[in-house]
Image 1 (spheres, rainbow, N blue to C red):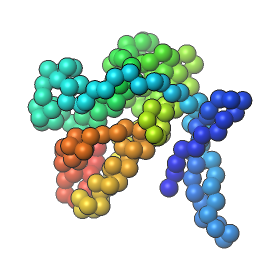
Image 2 (image 1 turned 120 degrees about the vertical axis):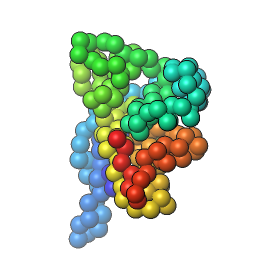
Image 3 (image 1 turned 30 degrees about the vertical axis):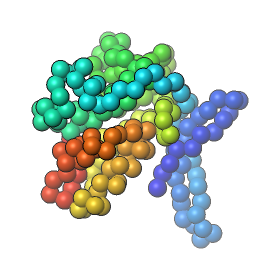
Image 4 (image 1 turned 90 degrees about the vertical axis):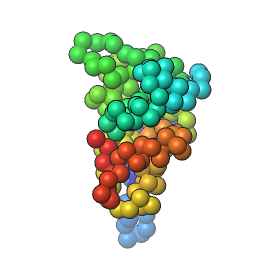
Length: 189
């Protein structure tokens, strides 16, 4: 099981991926990957997913779920959460696709699944709620694949949302789960 740990260096927070390893002397933790500096932004406004979709697509949630693939729905769930902190659509540098949002100098690019500083294009980590959003946690969510019955798979998907720092309303989670879960497996695609 991996988790993200913050280390303060010269007063600045930096994120590391930490993995547990079992040895003859018991469990040991070790940083396995540097993830980047941590950025925090203040909460701007509450916006539920239904209103976010209605404003953006002029559709209700039922139509939106019916008309879109799970991956596209997941992107909008993430954009809705980021919008609460003031992130706006990013049309920036040449070659950047439209599935990106920016706040100050931080870009979340869901086309390439990257979270980075636009000035130097180095990876960064966002602490918006209680966990951390970064390329690693988003890749885990977008690459989610589990086999088993609904009772086994649903909690694992919920943990993937939490790990990526994306709180999701229960009724939206249930709809998303039903959209993705087929034949005792769940794949976001």
